[in-house]
Length: 163
Image (cartoon, rainbow, N blue to C red; front, top):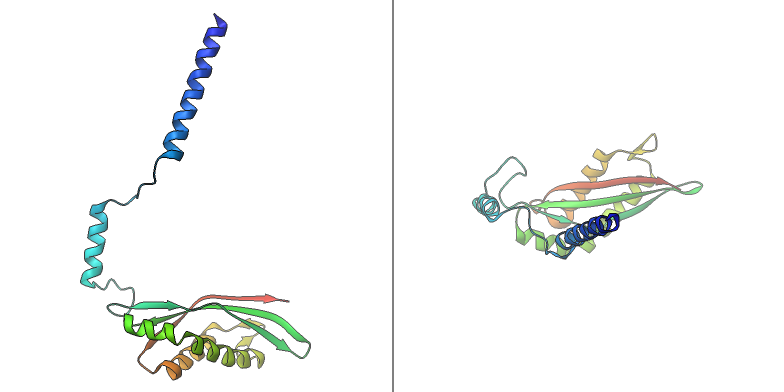
């Protein structure tokens, strides 16, 4: 009798495990947001309702590839600075223009930042002054793209690594 009970319990456990695996792994994924919530969000986005995030209607962001800059002193390279930059533009046409000019922008950023970081104008106590970097990048963007194309330069990541 004991053997029969053990066999039934083992079958129940294996059956439960199999059912759990079926429901967890073999079923297709389902979205957690229903159609009603998605439609409501889409209507707000189409209206261009300003919720306080961003300056205007249709603001777009163009993220550039990371910039990696060495900081060189009399002994050689002592730090490496990584910057991830996103540019805020007002419409899709300006975003396409910025994407097209991205290599020229990155070249200008690298040339300017290399000189600034190596003269230690943007460093205070060995720490990068983000506001100084941001002002310089805004100025360079305006020179390359024109005054009204790039609204703001956003620094997504600023990382210093000693070598």
